[in-house]
Amino acid sequence: MSDTPLLDLEARLHSEHPEALRLWLRLLTCTQLIEKRIRSGLRERFGTTLPRFDLMAQLERHPEGLKMKELSARLMVTGGNVTGITDQLVAEGLVERVEVEEDRRAFRVRLTPAGHAAFAEMAQHHEAWIVNAFGHLNERDTAQLYRLLGKVKAHLRPIP
Amino acid sequence: MSDTPLLDLEARLHSEHPEALRLWLRLLTCTQLIEKRIRSGLRERFGTTLPRFDLMAQLERHPEGLKMKELSARLMVTGGNVTGITDQLVAEGLVERVEVEEDRRAFRVRLTPAGHAAFAEMAQHHEAWIVNAFGHLNERDTAQLYRLLGKVKAHLRPIP
DNA sequence: TATTGTTATACTCTATAACTATA
DNA sequence: TATAGTTATAGAGTATAACAATA
Image (cartoon, rainbow over all chains, first blue to last red):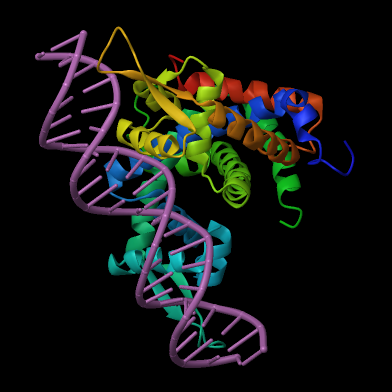
């Protein structure tokens, strides 16, 4: 139980922690159901995808722009993917690459005015879908769920 | 606020329910972090993927086997994908298709003895990863989180 | 006609690794 | 040497739609 958690799995694990497994399956199911709604909403209403929306959401929180490296870390994907998604959004005039004076290798990606406007509209619907998904939670439940997930997150990322 | 939730979004949504949005982002982050761990664990240790594991997990709960249609519903993916994943697992001797007497269009997919053994080993590690992910939750927190997510799930799927 | 399952297709996201240009 | 970002590649997962066989 202490420091050799993987040595005698066969003997005990399958029945020792069924609650953790049930919890995980429920967490996964909830997330997937909500995520599917958002993905189809974004696709059907705006012809876009969740990773693209997420990238724009990050930029909206950082009007001065974010470096590719920062975007990569925040979106939890590798650099090549950020390049690809950014290229698409640049081609559509929604984001732009701005040179960084101090470092000529890097630049900041930021929303264009058109991108800001497009994001604002999407964000409204996005928020409505979210609010609807959690529609039956009262304030207390919402706060408690948020708090408990905070504990989980803190343990998952020792250095947030 | 009552029956026209999408008409005047611009005016109110962005500031009216920030808690729901925060909750969703945290829920998504937790799920993604855990999921990434599980995916890389399955890949590195067992050379397999999460959808394949999930399919086998469904079969393990149903020793008599499941029809493709049932697997499709449970895994929340469309039929073509189930065919593809099943084909892979059949090729590796982990699952088998068994004819259904009453309906010659359909059959049941079930684990082979080799598949059962392979799944048992994976499931042990899988459970260890899950237990570790929720390692800092005490029993009360776990139960409460499970209960709250149950509320969310019930609202998401009116007919479970 | 409707349903079960397959096939074919196309698209998105992803990680990896080799590459460039700067630092 | 190390870092920022790109390119190229390959693979997995997904949805869609057309299809065959059976109900």
